[in-house]
Length: 255
Image (cartoon, rainbow, N blue to C red):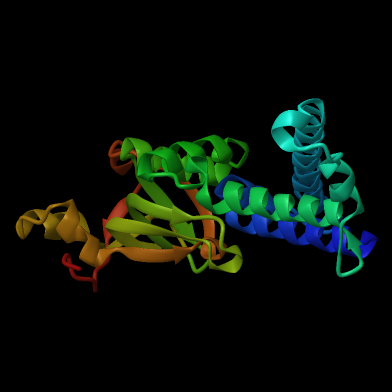
């Protein structure tokens, strides 16, 4: 019986941690023993909820038996003891109340992770959730600031490749596949000697010359893995005047 309770507790904790959006962020950011304790924590919550629901069920059976015994004319002269029958009932060698408790725990877990209204967030709800959860992480906070306000982001990759553009979407809950989707405005590289930005592609000029809107510009989107980003900052047009930015001699002005 103890093994069954432990298994249901851990399975419920893992299922909820990997399916609930808010908890999944915490789960992905946990390491070592923190992962096990996080799973056990949510599993214990569901098991305790199952115990509470089973106690309410037993109380309802007790009240029903008491009422029926107090009204023998309506329910018959026999003695009713549904609450005792419930406590003595067994299923596959396991006491009935334990089976019902575990069933309640599984139901509450599925409800909270799949069927509850809070588990089905719309685009606005997800954006607010990401904004709240990203406050503790500088990179994520800056990315979602760009997504929310439309500010341009300056992204320098580990290869010293540079992209300047609008952050369209971002993913932070898929482990090694975490990435951002960027609508590029400029791309180039940093000169090894002068450290000036050498522009190779001017996407913004291409968009303007071909009368492309943001939806059409998505055809030029770049998916950048977070593991490949060396630095990230906001980009302001005034930076063009404050630092050396040159067009590469052998590059085209179009994408």
